[in-house]
Image 1 (tube, each protein chain N blue to C red):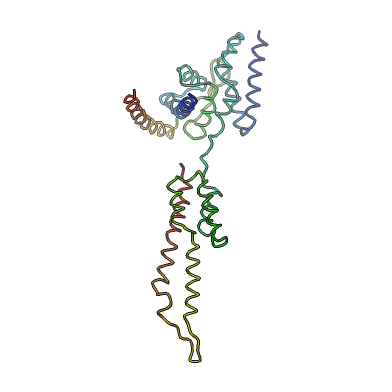
Image 2 (cartoon, chains in turn blue, red):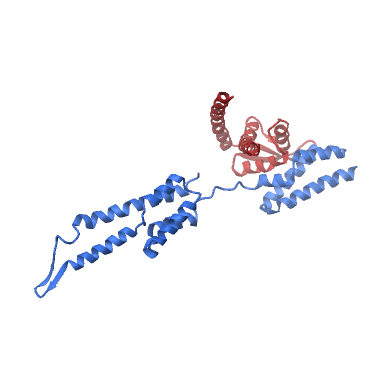
Length: 194
Length: 112
């Protein structure tokens, strides 16, 4: 009978040790030692096989014990997925007109890190990200240069036909600020625990 | 039914470490003692063995400290004691738990 109880506890501890193979070495050793001393404290030297079986059943399955020892899965935090989503929405269209933005929106919508409202915000504020600004700005440069007439008397520019000073400064600010602010907001929101 | 089991096991898992801290609030105890005490309460623990990893985690988090002490019978025993940080965590949890419990009770009574 004695050999049987030893065989059962040894077998249990061996299964536990094998199941704990994925744990850090120190944790694995400590866990097996803790369970071993639990069995030592619980079982008298003359314990019957029934006692041993009850003790082992009380401890539970080795796999369950090891599962409890594994660190709980951390909530997924902001990763490459989220950073690329923001980048593509913001400037993707400059390199891949329209498509860059669409890729960004796809990444935005498929990320688990943002709520439905935050995704809507990301899609609404950016019809093309910074691409409109890019267009407007090149348009301004173009219109400025064509409004200047070069003649033998020198270069004269028609002040009224070029964009006004307000537009030159105000329009870029209006176009740039919301996307940048929303990008910053989404970046922070993706990094928060949910 | 599966959902209820899942919710209950999450709840149990979350509350269990504070039950361990509460057991240690007035005296240090050795592992076997903690495990047997919690294991003897119906509905508290599913497998007693899972409490040892929990004790290790509490130690890593700085909520308990351990000391080996000689025993009159058998090999030395590892004793667990609550730390100041553990006491703070226990106090915070106790406050939140009571609020949460009362809130759930209020709703459940209304539905019954």
